[in-house]
Length: 332
Image 1: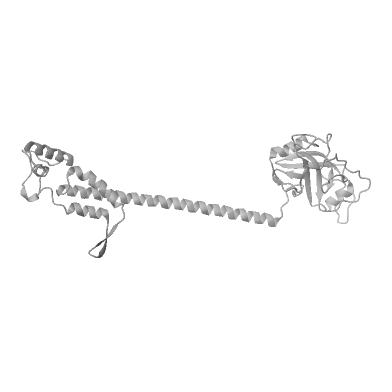
Image 2: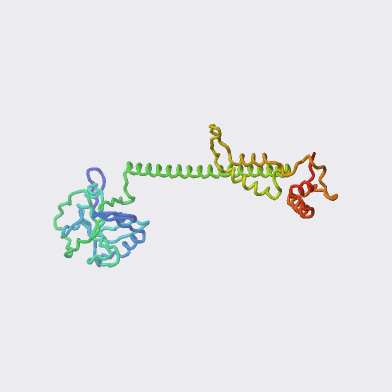
């Protein structure tokens, strides 16, 4: 093989396994998007049969008659990339490709339902166009004879630029894509971190609110028990008083005007003051120890004391307050 001026052997043909198409979303020359899977690309390679219709190598996308500068002997597919093995390539055309005159390749296909498709139902390679230079003036090349209307409806992907060994992407574009992907990933992580922190804060706030509610409830129970012992609250009313205090504690303070002065009071505190300021149901100083007929009330529950007071009232025909004073031991 003779050498050119740069010392590199001059190509007389093209190598095999030239990449011409790939799987993924591809936009054709008409602006329509098509999605191709790896299986679709594998089917393109499998169904290609040069005995039925051999795809030529062209310069640009021929609309009707343009010369063929070679032919596609066969197709292969690997990992979603479609490759071709060319043959009968014009040496002058091969030299121009080697010299870098044609930077891009573009595959044109018959869609599955195209009337000229030799394999209906499949995407079939129509030609492989080399883009980027004027066609060489090669004498004696035969024009490609297309059937009438053959070009109409064919789908060409002229923006697909695939190198022979790997998909070409300039370093600047790759860097921009990597930066954009990194920014998106960082934004997503920041959002996820913010959502996690917000959720943790809400859980902590809920735990704090529940602890406060429990503390208030415990204080209300202690208050009600103290008022029962003080004779300000009947034992059977203790549970009701605690429930009311729990509810009022969650209410907003009440504002009102008294004697021209604006005041604010918490409903729960007002209710507690109302109970504490009530007249005792029994006067403590009137009675000595409260054993009834020799029975001590020490250790009895509020419900048991209440039951005993009701029984005493019914038996002696006295008021509940008087009966309660008889059955409860007081400290003078």
